[in-house]
Image (cartoon, rainbow over all chains, first blue to last red; front, side):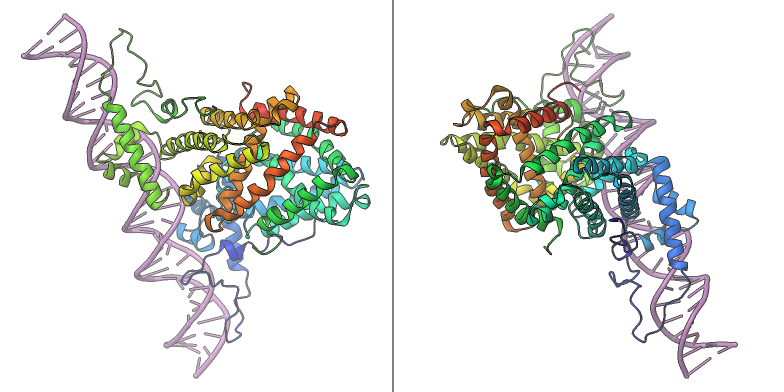
Length: 266
Length: 266
DNA sequence: CAACAGACTTGAACGCGTTCAAGATGATCG
DNA sequence: CGATCATCTTGAACGCGTTCAAGTCTGTTG
């Protein structure tokens, strides 16, 4: 259904790779003479080795306690080599980020397939995220800190996160279109909703990051409580009385939220 | 009016100061024998000197480019001495944070005194924040990054930020109670609104941090557009049709938002 | 006054992220 | 085969935040 939308975890390299000499002419560009670049995936193998090692150590020891030296040693390469593939330590996280987005979309689509009830689908989508992210809850705090930097490519609003974001938004579009609510809504609103639901997820994520209860039970409760409400609000939005407010809200979203999220080029 | 609520920038030290030997037995505690501690404010002077120097350099060069060595040198003390007063570089920011909250509350209260129109008061309060924070916009990105760490005392949700948060919430309570809307609302809702308006500010802050337009004009527009809407929504909440949704929303806020923000002990 | 104690101060040293000049590798060309 | 050139790899070195053992300073006590 929705999960095959973008090959989001393959194209991390434009951002994550730093050219050795000049700034950023990525090695993917073919040489002027049309010479083929080495056919062995040796380079990508090394890259993947480093990334996998890093992810493993991050989970084992946490982000800050995992040193670049440790990653390099454990992966059997030199520190400099790690920096050849990843311009900075934080770029190692992007792989994790993309991977999780993809897993989430797949898992959610599977789990919500059996129902057409909007609120239930939404709830499943959000719960699926919590489940997918659960193993990384501890480590996520530090990840979140990095992601909050507006100048970082890891920010959920950044251009570099566009593929992952697109995947997530597509999932929420699927949540809506697969529900009984979809045909009842006016086209314009239906068009805006997926991004809005993605924002709902962002709020849940925020809540989750700060949640210290076992199994983040509080966040789960928050989801169970907030999703029926979201359904009710959207449902009511069809009635006349709400027309002016809905129009305002649509304008606000269209003019101020979507551009920031990257629906239109900024 | 609202700005005298808490002496928020005085009590930063319990968190910012690290005892020299044992962990955190702050030097403020009097000795067992009842001996007085030195009466000269020498210590506080040094502390203030370091803080002021840091703030100046942060504004001049940005957070990351200002090194602890530079702060120490410029202040005429040793690096170790700076660490005697501030356990880490990020604690130097708390002073800035508290200061700004206080300035904002004072400025906003003054500027909104002439009107009782709710939306206008809210708009003034938010614009006042933008104006107050303007000099720090560039530096704020890095500040924000630190603040986003849930385990950091700089997080707007943390206990250490409670005084500053209380000041801000008090301001928004003032926004409401000074408006023509206040008497028309039911008590329970009126009780929840200040925190909700503070959340509105948090969203504006988020928007502002990512805003790269000159003079953050886009954020200002966002405020001008969103405040009338907030007013309208609150106004409408009185009518019967909305009763169920309002009740849901109140429950959600009471059960999930306020506890996180620290209205009740967690 | 000498001895003491606690608050304050110092700067060398540590560990980390990051950089970089230098080298190794291996495919392609004459 | 040797020369060439881009790709890939290395590890020493740099600058930074932070720590800490060793002071200095100042007011109090016997």
